[in-house]
Image (tube, rainbow, N blue to C red; front, side, top):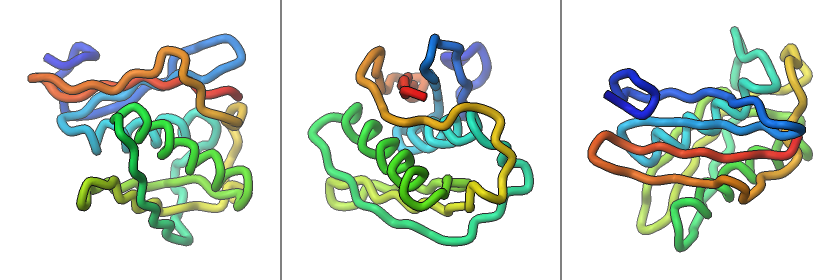
Length: 144
């Protein structure tokens, strides 16, 4: 059984937190867990039902710690939301030469239904990303 009481195939959920958004995610691999965290953040403030990606963004991230990679990835999501009014509808993460390559398929937020407050920044409060015999889990909090 996985971290959330079901077979560890992967998933995410938002957790109520005063003036913040906490997302917990789980999956068999580090990359899948981080991708679920991205999806959890996006689904917390826009309805992605039927959302269509209109452009692809590729970024390469490097950090000494896995937690820092997660923060950098989510900061990229917040940056794209703030500067381009776009949100990822699909995420593919691949480790390439010691870096994390993120392929983000982005949708225009102006075409989506807003269902919550948009994230403004990633915090370090309660940040975790770890792997074990049953897979990977993470928790991250964002200011909204």
